[in-house]
Length: 114
Image (cartoon, rainbow, N blue to C red):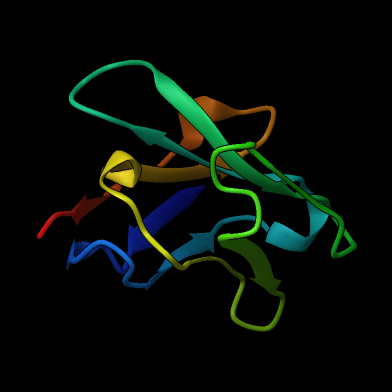
């Protein structure tokens, strides 16, 4: 089982990024998948979850209306589309099966700064 996150970078406030989480060793459509973020080595904060086998999703209040989590079953990839980014969105973003946070990948750094 492996997860590889990508798509992070430096973006100005108000900008957008799309993160990708490519899975191998299991099918993302079969499990709830979650994005979390870690700012400055602090705790992991939940960002969004997409349910297995459906498009049902849930978001932290801080990102609701700005972020969208989706899944591509063919590419076995989970995406996080982030818009209207704020400096508080900065951090390292990880994905993992909702009930198996130890499976997260190496993460991808997002920095929102002018």
